[in-house]
Length: 233
Image 1 (tube, rainbow, N blue to C red):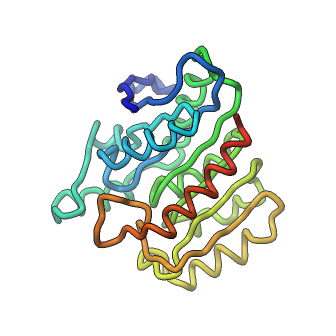
Image 2: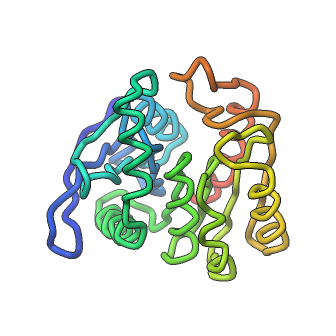
């Protein structure tokens, strides 16, 4: 399955951002927004969007760094671009990023074939933005993979308004165990939140990272994600 790149106008009039769009166009389908890691909309992101689209979802992967550097991508093997991605993760305005997600939601809801349901998922930095979408926007489901900065927004946990799932590795060097415990203790008793822990490190779903990818937890986490998003079909 191959997609196309479209342009989405920002609601504040500051410009437009590119979004990779893939999935069915001639049938009623939910829309899933897939939010990237610090590396931007890489080949792995578009491949993952296509993988999700094979389930029958329309999938949109927006460029969340566009206000800093449009269409930025980094290679994890290249220290210079990787470090820039890490800097951009700290520089991104999360409030404005959520506004951009809202703009993309409005566009997807206006497209023919949309069934009215919206899910959001994301990896690493994108997982944190997924959590913020669940607390601030009207969406139908959220799945955050090994998100790195949820602990900075736990005061918004009570605002989660949709079924939300977290996939977390037990050996994630970007999320020390004390932070993982804080996240779990804050969220685990909320009625709409499910947390899954895996014997894995960071980025365990990234099939382009031989140093991080782990097939078993990746397959299991995706199966659980699809079970949630299939309810939107």
